[in-house]
Length: 348
Image 1 (tube, rainbow, N blue to C red):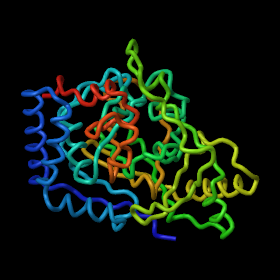
Image 2 (cartoon, rainbow, N blue to C red; image 1 turned 180 degrees about the vertical axis):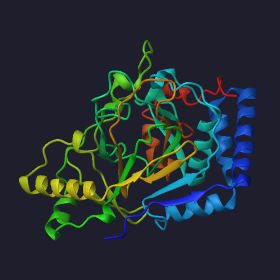
Image 3 (cartoon, rainbow, N blue to C red; image 1 turned 135 degrees about the vertical axis):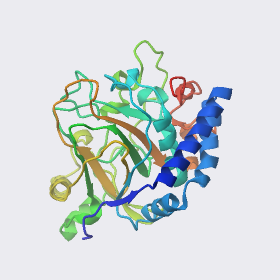
């Protein structure tokens, strides 16, 4: 069992200035073209100009040398407006471009046709009416430990969460498969295809579309009737976890159910709390770690908890069959959904 650790790196004034300059270039490009694909492609090119210490930290993280999560402190964010009451009221700003640059330095950022209308960068805010739902927009109920989009074969390798506001210091929760101790037969059971996984609420039409929008997204189906909770990620040679108990059906046998319960208990026991402050960006290895969030009482005031989120894949080509074109960044897109990829009209 590895030591529980979350690595961190603090950006210097110079690092922040470089990020500011690069996002400024992307914003200027948007104002000339209003073409989201041109901006995203340019972000991929400009990511090479990020400071070397950021590239070094990202490289160690991607290789597993920085543990299953990495926090970058001091990421520049723009002056904020009031926290939106739901994601449909939010907009892309410079912070979205910062996430894209980091995502493109690590791999390729992508979205889902069924999540937030195909947007590439998501807004995570507490939403009235969702308090007890098992989704990122809840509050009173804790967001349980889970792997992001684990029901789907094209789930990303990494998840980026950039904190814009967190006045109550609500904890993001991280745990990792390398931190748990299980019996030999439990390891074996978890590696057998015995667990039915279903799409979580964030992929449901009621959460994924804007009110009044024509929703033509292709709802993503589970990879198979039964999948392994633990498997080998041959592309990166790591043990990969697929874990989301709230959206897991009855395991195939009592033996498999007992192994899943043991894993859940161990992951809970080894939680590390990460209390993000504005300008903190946490990157989570979605194959080696699970994440969640502590419960809190949302006030729905102007300064409520607000994160920007992006999914990142090591190989965009892996999902080519589920995207309408090679350049499309939206899994499940029919050629229209990706028009909402990025909209910087309200950015300054």
